[in-house]
View 1 (cartoon, rainbow, N blue to C red):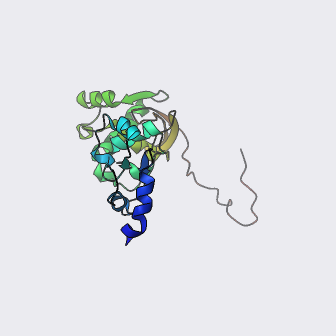
View 2: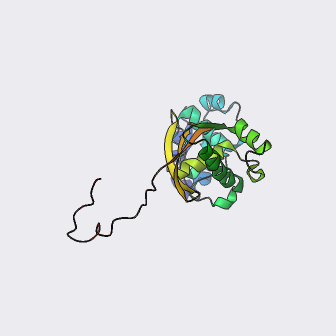
View 3: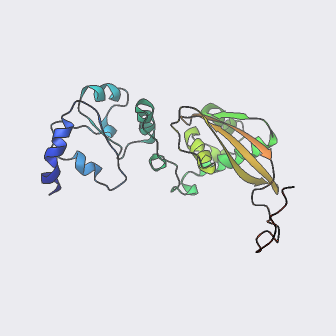
Length: 224
């Protein structure tokens, strides 16, 4: 029934000489739409990543994000400036911590290492990350950690976007170390290829509220 109702309309639209991008969450009909009888069609996940841009510029292609890798999504976003969403990332709000244990371990260890260099930014990229594991600066349990996933881990901690901006972003997250309150300041690249991390000591944001601050008719707490 869906084929009879929409096939002609979709076929007419897809004969126009421009690239068609099909977006949608899981189980919303992307594959069904791409499977209708059309003059020409091509799925993005089957295209050669080295020359997909030239193909898309000269033919009527359907670029479907269903089952395609994160790196291809990032490459497409970089070329066409498509807004990046958390739902499209390998590491997002719905991914449990135990799926990428090496990222969780590396993230915690780097907080401790940056705390030893308090007040100074440390630049971390993939080469530096691998070197720290090989030399024992990072624990062996962080072996195999990818810099893009680690950037996403810190972006989640700082409540930042998934990336794709035109410039690096700055964020901060709070943590405790040796019963002392610390803040990690993150400067993360747009393509999640590197980040700078600096740790500072500071009062915790959830400090105790004065006993009379919430009582009716009580004066506001002193600004001092």
